[in-house]
Length: 400
Image (cartoon, rainbow, N blue to C red; front, side, top):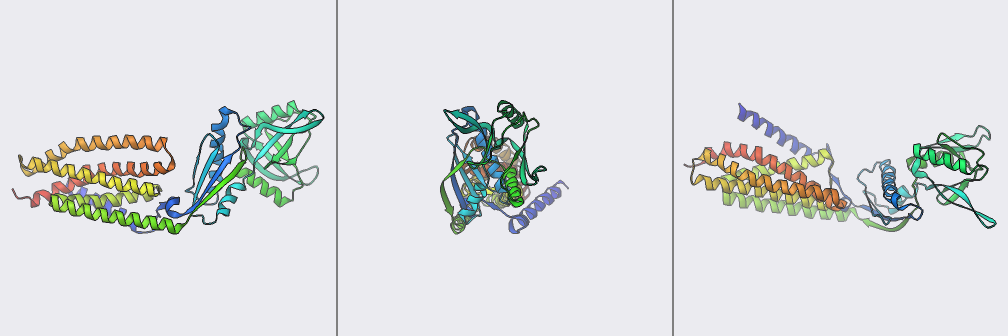
């Protein structure tokens, strides 16, 4: 009964995995190097940001750009940055660089500038209050003038900064700048509490709505300067993918032939287990939405090699035990003595993978993720599926 139970489970897993791999019920997600797309290089102007706030500012920029692009249905964007202000945005599936640039460039920079007297001239200099504190923006009609305005709402921290500014600059102007251009220069009549402000300008109703929408999507806390653009053609990505698939298939066939030729029946068992392992991994990639890049595919292929190592180790231990024990005892002892080496090797790899995923760039993360998932799947198939097949098939054909 237990044997039938395991057989049903493994059969169901194989059928489900195969179904998902060979149908478009869920699609594989490919990174920019395989799907094609655009890479944008930016420099963020951090000259007005305090040193202890640079990290938070860059995180805010990253989150806002992601939100802006995701709103257009593109979910596999990768954004990286350095503390120097260098920002790299990788957007897959986009062929026209202008579309990619507009996605980010259309997000305005909002600043509140305060007056500074220099001799007989008054200039406006940036204050602490910027678009990073904005949580909402709406187009409304000014009840006094009847003209469209944009109403802003700040978060708790921004509301406090705004209150302090309006208290400090009573009867003085505070300029509201968008993309380094003055939009409105209202004079403060009294301290304003509650975290709300209004942008007045010569807006039409449509212009006010568009501005509010852009601000709501994310007002960048600092200006970004585009310094470079790279385009990866989808045809090139498809070529790389086909090379990877062909290489993987050829490698698997060679490994399978070696296993069967050298280990005979145990090799057949190992090949069957590897086939399940491959389909199970691909199924997991689809279910979890793993974005496959060239590095990720490399990690997957390496994990197949580690799965082969586990099967070879099991086969060798069983061969040694067969010299001294009967078949059932040899199988049991072979698995039990091979398992510690398999376990320790895979745990060491998983620890390395965790550090690679946490501490490195997105390119290495793709490699680490597929390798880590592959190692975990390899341990499961070795413990359950390979062992099950070995105990059910080998004794029936073994010659005492």
